[in-house]
Length: 461
Ligand SMILES: [Zn+2]
Image (cartoon, rainbow, N blue to C red; front, side):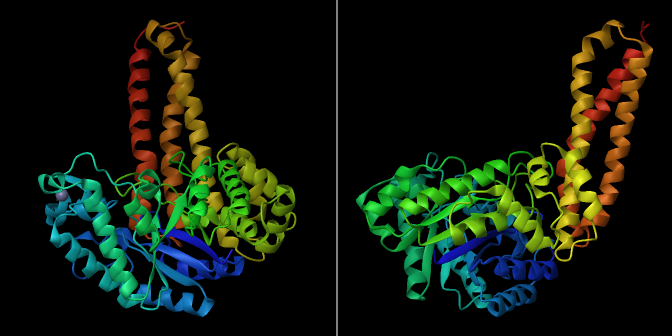
């Protein structure tokens, strides 16, 4: 495997620029050769200032990222979507005129102005990363079923292909190799897509079960492909997330790549499903899986996870006594167990103590939700009795306390998260992250407060 790449999705709760520089060093040490940088609204486009997020990096900070990567021998692959996944941009009133039939997810590909816009954005990105060998143009998950009148007149898929070809040709002329996510190509196997596949490198993303037939086809047609696995959980909007399905995905890919060797592999770290979705997770959380994937890409499928965990605890943290078996299994399954096993080691790691701190902080969210689940599910089950007055006042008071406690614990954790994570993340992003985790839960909790208040007015056993 020549290319071992990590996808860094900036639309997540993304680290401060200085902290990212130190993370990059660790990725390089693990054996990664490239990073795929998905900017979204974190790139300060001078031509389109309204799309810039308050936590965006400055151009100087991106230059520092470029410089650090150069020093570390890490190639930077910029990612600029050419067709869809543009909600971060088109949702702004100023730019909505370019959306496709009112759909801010993608822009109109018949509109020559969107081609101009894309080139302007490309120009600004390449000014920071002029020596990149690869450039990723996304091109995935287009919605072709509701075209505008102009696109409907032609064949919408052909309009899409024309634009992808246009972007590709421009980049090829600049001496870049062009990457695309492959789903549109895998779903439209035509002479035209096959012709285009000879110019681009399809990145086959398969995050659950790996469908072997896709790579089998590429392999049979002599198309050089990159594989893409998922090393960031997105199942629940809570804390650390389950590691097992990601380990499985990486293991499955290792077996497929043995049969159909890929020219590169991208470990994807999706920060959100789309720009308008809640923030999933974040980069340092994925450090364990980044290590797991790096090891797999170097030596093939990990046969003994226990052994890998032992080695990771020792080499990455300098803590041979750290029980990673229990911790990794416990993430999002048994947060209490994780807490017991992590706490004694905080501040004691010889290396990468920050990662332990961050894991600990996110596990605290899982722990809070464990308590909330207990309260809410019991409340749900007891609702009939509350209404009928068939509970003892002791039980009723107990649940009233629960409602109060949830409120208090959430407030306390919110302050704690600012302290624990504020060193690593921009505060305005942290606010958004906490809101997406806590707001609706707190509203739900407040409603329970009212229900129980009401129940108390009845005579109970
Ligand atoms: Zn259109």
